[in-house]
Each structure stands twice: as C-alpha cells, then as structure tokens.
Length: 323
Image 1 (spheres, helix red, strand yellow):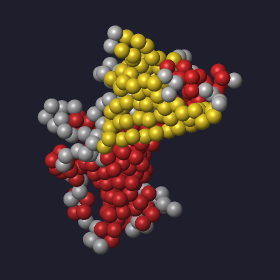
Image 2 (tube, rainbow, N blue to C red; image 1 turned 135 degrees about the vertical axis):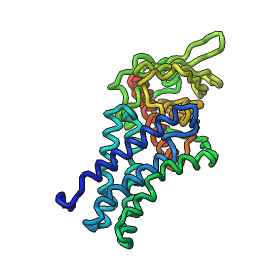
Image 3 (cartoon, rainbow, N blue to C red; image 1 turned 90 degrees about the vertical axis):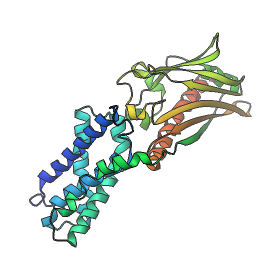
C-alpha cells in the first residue's frame, strides 16, 4: 500500500504538468513550418515524455525509499492526470488517448523504475533528474535523422453466412440506413470511431464507384477495380481533405492521413453448401510512424475489429432477408 502521508502529491502534479507542457510543445512544433518533422506520434514524445514523467514522480518519493511496486505504478497517477488534462484542454481526442495510454503507462513505469534504482545507489541529489529533463527534446532533434519504415499491412476476417452468395452480394452493394443497433459490439466504435451509416455502389462516367457515409459527416468514395458478380469485388479508396470534417476523428488516427492510409477492400463470397456461404473481407493499409513497434499492432487490432463489425452487419442482414 502507498502511504498517503509520505506521498509527495506535488511531484505527481509536476509530472502531469511536464507531460502537458511537452504535448503542447510537440503539438505546436508539428504544425509550424520551422519544424515540420516533429510529431506527437514519435519515439521522442511517446516514450521519452512518459519516461521523464515517471522519473519526476519517483524522484519526489526519494526520501520515502519507494518499493519496486511503487516505482512501477505510482507514475501511472501522473499519466492519468496528464491524459485527463489533454482531454479537458482538447489537445487530444478520446480515440488517441485510449490507444496511446498503454505505451505511455509502460514508458512511465520504465522511467520510474530506472530513477528509483539509480537513487538507491546515489546520494539522492537532483543530478539524476536534471540530466534527463530535456530527454524528449534531445530525441526530437535526433529522431528525424532516422528514416521511417512504412509498414504495408493486410488483414482478413471471415464468417459463415446462412444465405446464398447472391443474397449477400445484394446487401454489400446496397447497404443503406445502417442503424446503430444493427452493429455488433465493437471496441473501435466504443472509443469514438464513427460508425458507418451507408455504403452504396453506383455507376458513374468514371466507372463503378462505392460511396460511403459514416457518422459525424464523414464521406468518401472508392473506385471498383475488380468485380465478379456474386463472387468477388474490390474497390480502391479515395480520401480527400473533406472526407473527415473537423472533430470527426482525431488527426493522429485519421484514415488517409499522415500515419494511417487505407488502400483497398475486397469481399470474397465462397459457397460452402446450398444455403451456406463463406464471406471474407480483405483490407490493405499502410502504417507510417516513428513508433511502428507499437502503432502496427494497435492498427491491426483496430482494423480487424472494424472489419469484423462490417462482415457481421452483412451476415445479419443477409440471414434476416433470407429467412
């Protein structure tokens, strides 16, 4: 148990304030012409900042001889306060906060643990703390010299549907008036990603197009590049600056943005028996960040969660209409 009488709350607030200050600095520089390569989605901010927050908090506990458990978990309080402050001040939206929280908590634990262990073998002066306060800014200068390694991803989700391929095909090409209650539980939508409300294929002078609408005014189109009736269809997305209105989705997770780009979607329908069809969705997308070690598994989790929602929508609609 953490003894409240010996817990210097001021250092927790200092840690949270440091985190908010770094978020403000990185956010400002990322939108300036002088430092366009600076990003919140970077090693410097995502790991450097929580590392220092953890170090600040545990430095404040130096006279209480914190246990290893305290070194690991007490910094989480400061991270929680910083994330709350980011939400209140609108520096970040709910989606980014929730998706970033795990890596920020781990980073603060590492910083707290290293600071706590170093203090056990030092004279507990301010030297260990002073030496790392500028760590995120130092990493910010060095990091752009390391080239990013974009990751091209492919994910697949499939379900068995008690309906014919023709019935499912019709639902895919003409998905109108999608109601919230039709969609299964989804972590992606729970944290604030807009839900789909319509997806319709139409012939245009440029060929067959897919027009999609989501909640909060999100609209985008896709060009059909391959079609085999009742068997398979592929469309290639076209996202524009107007596809996601301000406030519809956090800029750091915006589809077609700097960090995440969705290329195409394919639906395959394979008959398995007279009234049973295997419905598969395949998506290709790209993740481009300085922290792909974390961003890639997060993107894969979110993508597969969203794709699962889509195929289950078509499954329920097809089975209901077939019944």
